[in-house]
Amino acid sequence: MLSKELVAASTVPLVLSVLTEGESYGYALIQRVRELSGGKIEWTEGMLYPVLHWMEAEDLIESEWRESETGRMRKYYRLRREGHKALQAEQQQWMSVHATLTKLWKIKPRLT
Amino acid sequence: MDVGPCNLDEIMENQTSFDLNLAIQRWREELGQSPAFRSENLDELESHLRDSTTTLQTRGLSAEEAFVVAKKRVGGGASLEAEFGKVNGTAVWLDRLFWMLIGLQVWGFVSGVIGLITRNALYFGLNSAGYDFKSHGHAFPVTLFTLVHLAGFAGSLALCWWLFCRKGQRFDRWLGRLLHRRATLALTFGALCPLSLSITPISWATQYLLVTSLGREKISGIYFSQSISGAIILLITTAALTWLTLFLARKRLRLNKA
Image (cartoon, rainbow over the protein chains, first blue to last red):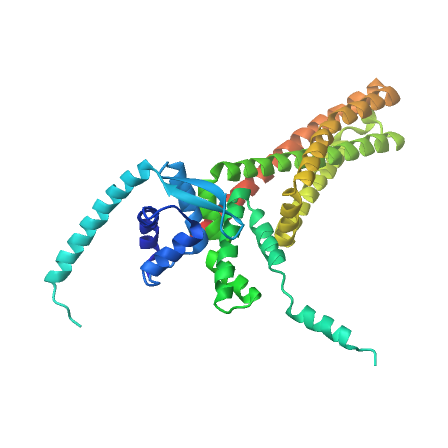
């Protein structure tokens, strides 16, 4: 399980990344992240929506209410150009953290 | 035998029936009491809850079990409200302003009515008792005016304290549910505004009545006592309200720390 802080920091890049696969809606986004992380990233599901609304206000994504295959209305989210740009910036940042940690952890001997 | 198979069926039905739509509606109403959630937010959360419930049901859970698990996963309470509140800040502040306005009007109305009734009761009471301001002085009416007014002030404060601290959540929930219906909201505001405004003309009318029925000399005596007691009351209520504000602020700060 991820710490609260890490969950908060990684939600935006995760949402942006999942949306590069195509438009999606809240419930499906959560399912996709759970599936890819092997259940290690668990969100309090309702908490995703304020983040989505904030991202929409920042023009990173756009949304549309449409009828789903079940016949019920559903709100779909799509990436915008600003979102693609933000994702690139996020990628660089996360990769530099990742690269640094990998180097550090390879140097130190494993005690277990 | 009275108990036929028909009744048995009914009993079985009652034990197992769970109305998903009703449960979702109740859950929605509960969340909807907070200004942090717009109705579009609730639509989206409901859509999520329904998707989640359906998926869980395909894994073999009953409708009720699926609903309970899905509801828990969505989360709720203060943290969800706080996160939505950050996005819907305007709505939250409008709601606060609205409550302040209602408080102001109710306070104005209640203190106006208390003042009007006690003042006139005292004027006419003193007059019918044959009180003579010239020979008896002003000490007695000043004390009487002040005490009666302060009793009214303390009484209304005590009523507020009892409603909000003692009855607490139950009163809060009842009021919240009532005021989040559009019709009752409009009615409350529509009624409060003219009500609190109506106090002033009524008080003018009673003053006119006083002047015409008591005569100038008695009126000047009454007004003299009243203005002295008014100054005393103002001092005491200002001190009390200042103390109350500081007390509540300190209590709030302590809650933040905890």
